Image 1 (cartoon, helix red, strand yellow):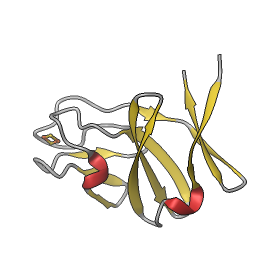
Image 2 (image 1 turned 30 degrees about the horizontal axis):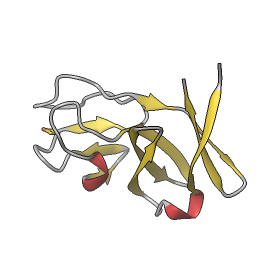
Image 3 (image 1 turned 180 degrees about the vertical axis):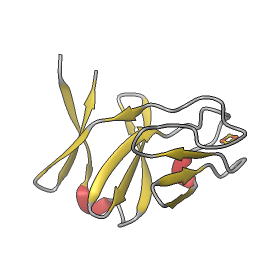
Image 4 (image 1 turned 90 degrees about the horizontal axis):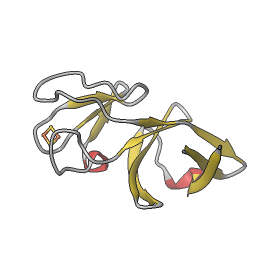
Length: 103
Ligand code: FES
């Protein structure tokens, strides 16, 4: 069943940047690009690093530990040393609140 959860105030995510939030025990990275919000798992698929500590550029998040890059829209691993994609989540904005779809 659909499970929309409020995860952040919209204004808490800086433009063209990323923050990390904890949602029901999941570590989630929230991105804002051109006013649009995207969400992925926050833990890198390669090791114990938080993508929210990384660098967001051109729709990709660069992991702070070994500089692997993921597409924030698809979760796709874009380069070495990554071998696994990360999960993405559907978001919507309701008023000032960012909602995340968890299943
Ligand atoms: Fe992210 Fe290695 S832990 S690239």
